[in-house]
Length: 246
Image (cartoon, rainbow, N blue to C red; front, side):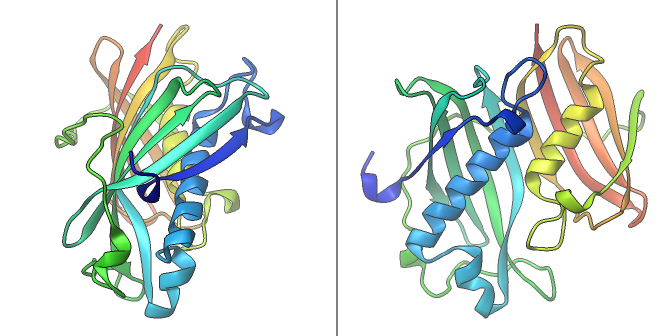
């Protein structure tokens, strides 16, 4: 891949980023990818800080990640990202997280929308020029982004609220916290289960102290339909499909 298209960041798994098994937490993996995007976008002049003066912001619409092997404490990581597609209202991003030998530990693909900060509605990606949004067609992982079903009944419920540490610079819950909430919903309920992939469809914003329920229902063996309900706003904040392995 042409290096001008790709942003590379290096990380070391810190002690506060792992769980009791000394493996990197799901939220930490999402935070690595988010930091990688920020660094790459700042170099290209399309970061949140660059477009804030235009009253615009980036938000995730969909995020799919496969975790093939979880990094462990103190492991050195190489995180890469690039824009793989550009549409009128959406930019697609791909990611890889590799070990020092360039073995892929995790791969992800996501779509982001450019929105007006006041109206919260999508804005066309033409500011200041689409030339700043050069793309490369290589994909980290193939995913069709099929519609995630919204079930009538879910048998598993986890009740919580949005904490201050969940809120990002857009003043709403960060995408990494959405992922962690879906994980918390099922962690410990699946004997010996390890999250293998997660597909999130973001539906609505979550603000500080919003009252939330995260729901889950088995689809097939090791696969769960999940949903976040925002009781404060009275809507669905996200849907997800998660796959777990022994």
